[in-house]
Length: 117
Image (tube, rainbow, N blue to C red; front, side, top):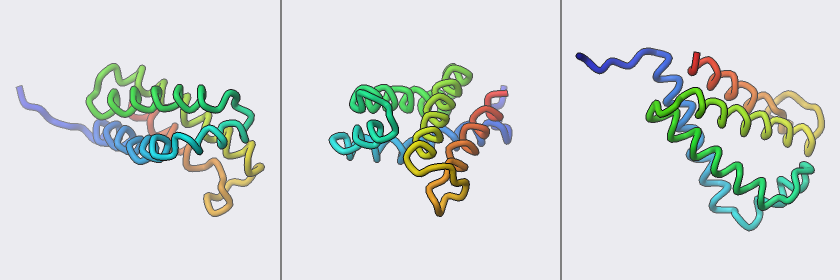
């Protein structure tokens, strides 16, 4: 039995890998990051930060290693929709990334969803 990755597997793995720098930013700025959550109306900020880190770890591990990929995708989508919400709440309704719009987390959430189908 040969081990062969399909294009959808590559998408799933990439979606998971992309969480690593996202996670590192939160962990490295653990003292500052709760302020961003609070600014978006997600209180208490530290609790939302910890919850988001846990969900991102589950998403990254699950997507990269194909462990309960649909559950991992659910974790990813919750985090990414939350990020899109926070971006809009903090910066207003703007679409383009140059104006801090939500298009990147929404695209990433859709890519995660497609990878799990």
